[in-house]
Image (cartoon, rainbow, N blue to C red; front, side, top):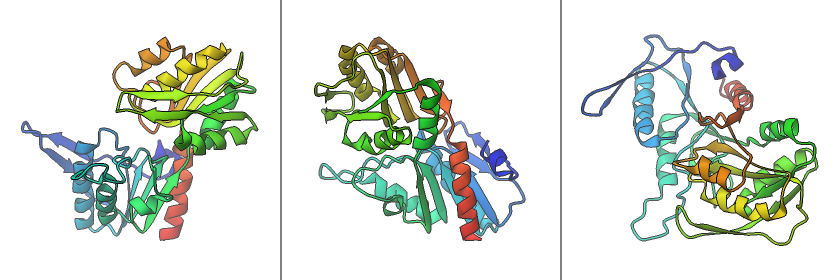
Length: 281
């Protein structure tokens, strides 16, 4: 889809898995001087190793400029060591990618305490895109005047951007996390009764935060209750738990393939690739 949007030729890397779990990658025999590798890095451990094999092989074949498009970029959440001995995976993986790729383009990376993607991925070109515009456009197709709600301060950047696109109201809740599956959400008294409420976040993994948020919002007897995220993992029974919590719609972008995909980030990424190609050439 990205190649089609860019009107560029496209080919696939052939993957073979040996019985012992090793991967063999085979690139197309003839490569141009500039190659764009597109791979979303969910389920990352195996993909990262294969990505390095691809990059090193491409360089050995004479590729001069190597760009990575990773709509979902893995290992960005761990940006400091919270306990002695913890690996700061953001810096390690970011430096690894910068070693092999001249440029990296991603969408809504899970960054906490840094301001730019380049701080995490010190490549010559590090581009972080926001999915808020296509997200807002999709919501506009479904609601005339929704109220946008974010589960915590980290979500404010997405919530405020989506809300400002059509001058919608928005509110931010407070969140306390007690582990991967335990969170507590608190909302003040808000004028939300009978409205179309939309919870927005960048990522949904276990869905615990969104479930707690939905339970809180049910007390307002909303006309509808929806969840929309850029990256939808919805691990395990997350979808069922959200439905049980009163969520009518569960939506995500196509950055990670999932049954909840309803809006696309392809045009957004294609524009960024075109700009980067113009810059590197």
